[in-house]
Image 1 (cartoon, helix red, strand yellow):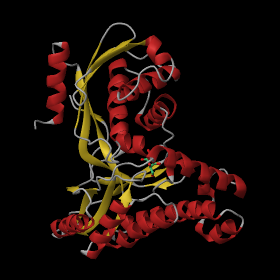
Image 2 (cartoon, rainbow, N blue to C red):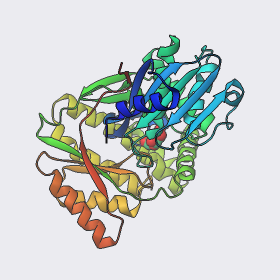
Image 3 (cartoon, rainbow, N blue to C red):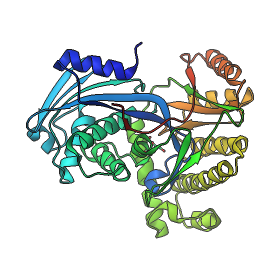
Image 4 (cartoon, rainbow, N blue to C red):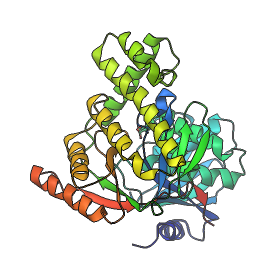
Length: 385
Ligand code: GLA
């Protein structure tokens, strides 16, 4: 297949005639560690994938947005009325209209535009194709309109598009990764202050590789379960009298758990509090250049998601166990859960053997064959030309 940026430009020319004023790319992400901590004001450590969504764009007169998507093959068109209230533009168009809506809500004079969108980020694999779409459109509109919205303020706006216009109650991790990541680095993000530190994550130098296995598990009730986890965490924070679970340190965990009556709420809180600490421990090891040693933290994160947060599914657990059995240094589900991808940290020459072991374990259990790819940390959203 031709390059995604070329496909966006070719789509633009075919649909709208002429060349676009520019092209803007934003990546999908994996989260190295720190799951379901973002909406608890905690810490996350995602990195951007070399898979990108590209928007080729050109201003057009009036408050009017015309958008072609390679994936759906459709062109949609909406004006100020349709973006005035959530729900009028639906399906994939909601992510685009949501960005326009959130910009206008924040008082920006959003330029009308024609946009052609192509993407290499697979949908439904838990790699944040939606945040990549939001970020590509947002950066395009910010540049085309010369809007005063620096990169560090863009994730909150894209998250608002997703929360309030699309209606998904996500945290700020995915949009931050799509916008703020740097090539060769993981993004250490404090989700309360939105401060970031770019942590060098040089897998090559450490003789390592990162295998991403798409579990191909269908997302079962993921939206409802995500919202339920969020509610449990908020209930725990309220009961403990803290603003968010981020305010409970691991040294206070036992005392905090003793104050939570409901066993399920206790498990949810324990995951979040210990996961925040695992992010801090992972960052400390990476800062010290001890990359190989993060493996056990990844695996502990998985166990916590499986047993305490209860967001894994049999395909995912099978992939993690098979990867570890074949010599992975650590493995965990990444993303919101109930399907999606597994990360396995492996020796540079072990990626194929680990992937084969996962494929075999899947076949033994009669699961649909998984797919896999090895990845290196890539850059966040950028104007291409
Ligand atoms: C999804 C959400 C994120 C985050 C993760 C879990 O990807 O969009 O905000 O909560 O799940 O870590």
